[in-house]
Image (tube, rainbow, N blue to C red; front, side, top):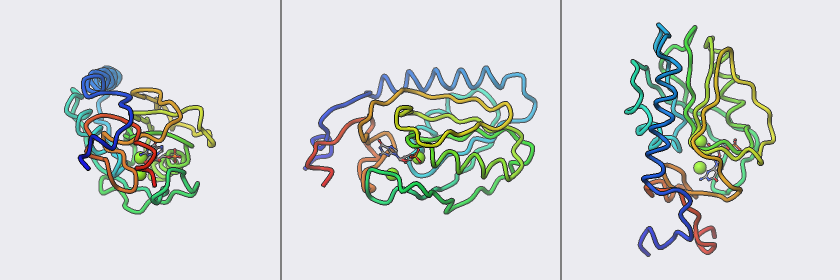
Length: 187
Ligand code: 5GP
Ligand code: MG
Ligand code: MG
């Protein structure tokens, strides 16, 4: 079965995504334009990889880039509530402003774990830039660090979405848009 035939509905297409990513990049570029120390952009693997690549190429600032990997989901569609860092930073974030780049914030468990981790490493501020946000699903109230800000691309309705980096059971990351799978594909 060809990839696109697995999709029931497209929520945001490529043009809508790139227009919004360009807005976020301009906002970040403007917010950091007066700062002397370049921010450290930390992509949360694997889900953020396409968003991260599109975003950083539109940010008009010198930046440092690194990745962390967090495991919490397994193959299902519900977080198990106990995320752990399975691959850590290489870059030193002490006294730096970190911008965590995420695909989607759902319960908030992953983010609160990452915020605490960056703070423990001595980051002076931690911002979050997530492509999608599902605020109605929040279970954990997370606190940004220092002067950190929260940037988000779109508010996502309460569907399990795939594409633009996001998977179901490690499939569908390569879809260039955000969509919802046909029910039979979630089996
Ligand atoms: P949280 O810890 O906030 O519950 O979940 C965050 C992580 O769960 C996200 O970074 C993402 O990897 C995954 N996730 C949450 N909602 C969705 C969704 O609708 N689709 C996909 N593919 N992953 C999701
Ligand atoms: Mg993620
Ligand atoms: Mg996943």
